[in-house]
Amino acid sequence: MTDTFKNASDTGEIPSFNGSEKAKATDFANYFCSYAELYHQKQMLADHNRMKAYHSAIMGNADVFKDKVVMDVGTGSGILAVWAAQAGARRVYAVEYTDMAKHAQKVMEDNGVADIVTVIQGAVEEIDLPIEEHGLEAEAGGE
Picture (cartoon, rainbow, N blue to C red):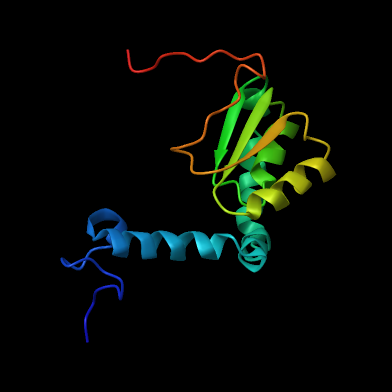
């Protein structure tokens, strides 16, 4: 019996860190397939301790969110983006790679924050934020 992952790289590591392109693609697909399922989102939402901690962290620090631009990467159901908007964020970008983005958009509409939260489906490394459309300016970082 081996202690490595079934889809491990030749060196026994997780393929997304050190594997063939096929192994990386399989690892990527497996990861995102699970998060695309409603039952998986439901499991996370049903974890009351987890959800209470997130809610308390956001709503208990509304002064940190007030008038800020927030990005929720891997938004899933979108609940954290909703709370960020409710806490006073000026604009929230909820980025979701999977088709769960379609459900997240409905969550924004049903919670009355679709005017603040923009759901974007895509990989965070590849999306373009519609900042000009929202009257925002980009700053060059790293200096």
